[in-house]
Image 1 (cartoon, one colour):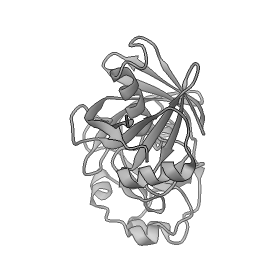
Image 2 (cartoon, one colour):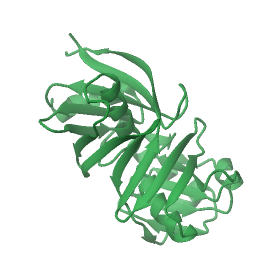
Image 3 (cartoon, helix red, strand yellow):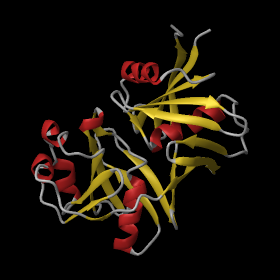
Image 4 (cartoon, helix red, strand yellow):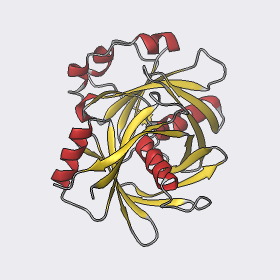
Length: 264
């Protein structure tokens, strides 16, 4: 028997949209080099690996190039798989032990809601290559634990961006969040996310970026509940609720494929 493997589109209610993640169920942890090789083979923005523990699941995330400290869409995909496969009770929440501490997932009507840490940002100076690589003028530049945050003038500017990914990869940071007010009133803000140094030129829908965006737009708009849209070519909707030092990220997921990964 091989290792169960799933391809799940997260933060979407239909296949071939949102952000795809591979989810691999393991009996025990192999070495990190094997995990990285699998993630490179899957070639998704993240591959999630899960090991059952006594009261929770240990969870690790890998891009095709590196292990990362926090990933929203692959956590959403993991919770979706665990409930779908009967590995977690339908009415129970799921706890994950991760490099970012204990994360939780719960069902909220038709959505999955993730309990993540707030990743607050502060005003920052832009590195010399950042704005030229993005090709935009910034209304605001901030920085948090992981990423730079740039606000641009409009959604039109946001959508028309064509970054120089080779130059952007030289900026010493996990990734760059670019955000703007929305053109569609049903959303509170829109964004895109770029992480070429981690092997992801543009991530389709980035849950962890919304741990920063929730903080930023809460201060800008004076509210704590948002409907956000990530305006990548695939696109996806994220519900964001800020509560103190936690951010709750809501969305749906769809299994696109399932199979087995060889043990060799």
